[in-house]
Length: 227
Image 1 (cartoon, helix red, strand yellow):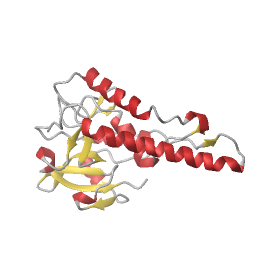
Image 2 (cartoon, helix red, strand yellow):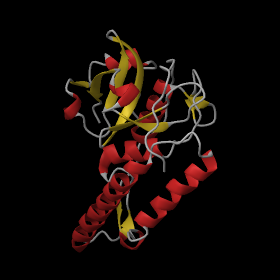
Image 3 (tube, rainbow, N blue to C red):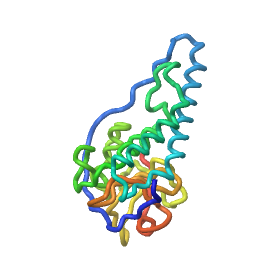
Image 4 (tube, rainbow, N blue to C red):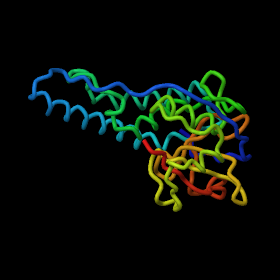
């Protein structure tokens, strides 16, 4: 994939609501002896999720010169190769929450939406997303968590921990941007100094740098949503 592309205009902001949570784990057998097997499956799932995200991060920045179909095929191919070595089906049914935990569930849902077009007021993959519409959809469908509709309200959410320092951000944190202290944009931190967001009209959901360039200069704060 091409290197991280920097958005050139600050996005508009408006967003929406509701869905479900992950199912429970069903062990392959109810006998006590099955517990070590479940632990092993959980560890393998977490390892698979972590390896996938870490390996894909450098390639996740969208390139406006690459057609969406080509970008999607490249990412899907990488995921297939990385997960090919992890055969979890033989040990039982593993819930999404156990495949790397709740943070991984958020990141996996978010990354699956890469390439979705920006649309002001959009709140679904079919309609497209604005910045807060994307963030709200991810948390709602991945964990059943309802977030405020617009970025400035997300930033003042009472039960979300403030992350003041940029170097204290963790994967899954919300990151906020704006000018002169006024928040007008939000994304999801994915690690390695990068965040996923829906930038602005004419752009797609993508990953950009939080350390250098346009968005680095407009970063204001982070919030850690209670999961």
